Amino acid sequence: MGMPRSVDFFAAQPLLGRVGHALATLEAQSRLAVAGILIGWFFIDYLVVSLGSLQHGVRFFDMSAMIADPARLFLGVDSSMQRLLFSFLCLACLAAPLAAPRLIRSRGANRVAWLAYLAPLALVVLCAALLYSRTSAEFFADDIARHGGGPAAQHVSLGAGGYWALIGSLFLGIQGVHRFHRAAR
Image (cartoon, rainbow, N blue to C red; front, side):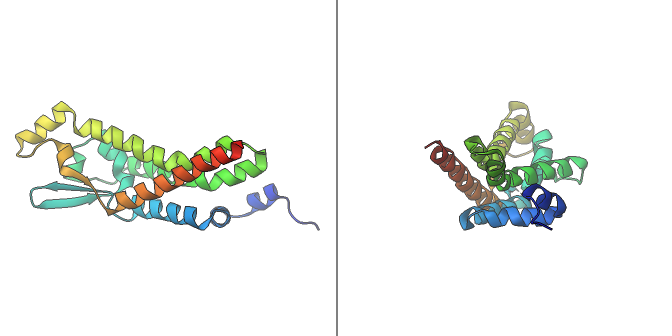
């Protein structure tokens, strides 16, 4: 009985085993960046919403609900299928940098695969742009202003989770672009 081929080995491993193996192939700095993004997106408040003396935090995996209905920033989020689906999108973006080295090994020297390191940053930038455009829209700002506040965007700030995830995303993005250019040489 010979050594299993890599495709057979990965097909036989459970999902967590494959994720663990993919994490082990990343260098330590990228593993820390992925861990920082994971913590920032799922375990620490990503945004802090304040109205007067009231403050509450919003996690990143609730972002799709906030974009769909910005009033939820102030009213809170109810559990929904939207939250679950967006969580899977977040996990897929986190898995993209883990898959890049394997894609390059299995398909040859495809340097474009290194751009998968940009997936978490792209998701953060897209969500930030969508949320900002929705919360600073004239109709929503006027509605909040009539209830004693200013434009909604002035009441939302980045929380600790946002900083963790932003730093990790920027680091991974820089790593991916650097490797993309290095593979071109």
